[in-house]
Length: 272
Image (cartoon, rainbow, N blue to C red; front, side, top):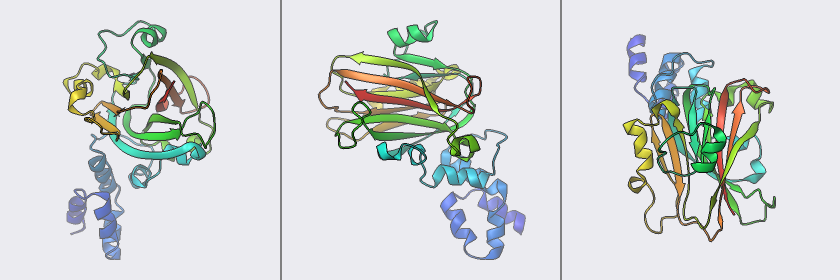
């Protein structure tokens, strides 16, 4: 009987499991099985099994769905609003970051050339597996005044185990800038994307660049987002009058050095 209910519970989402666990002690024990929370997490994220993990699946589920976001840990005074974009899978340790959604004809030889000609930034030594993406709205960092009406958008992505890592929790892991790019002239939209480099030319990834299918229409001011198995992208329409857009790329490593794997990525954008 117990094994049968465990198999049934595997097909339930997290909210249903919490309700089931509250009915009686017997069901509470059923719900504590690791495999139950593993399937709930993968189902609710819509992502394949990543293989071995470093933490209990129940804790991973909680860190993904308890409403926590990265700016609650640090810089909360700059934070205004956020929404969950979704999850994607970085299968290879290399990714392309971009601040504009035009499909690149070729990948340049160096980061400097990519930034100059395409607004792209390639990063390597990424921790593979499931990544979770949020869109954050912050006070603009140019003047540093919380009273300023200026805002900045950040595509904020993290490895799904990041919030449970001690180095992240105690603040010893920090972001550093790896590139920036300016889009000259008046811009109407602000976009950003993170794409698994090995899957850049996949048919599913190409949907990211078909902006007419998912960008907001007309006077729709709400941000839009698109996820595929190996990529995530966001876009905001109808920007206020400007002279261009400043895009910055930041990464966080799982340590204080320069060789540890990348566990978090941010693409920030503010108007010039």
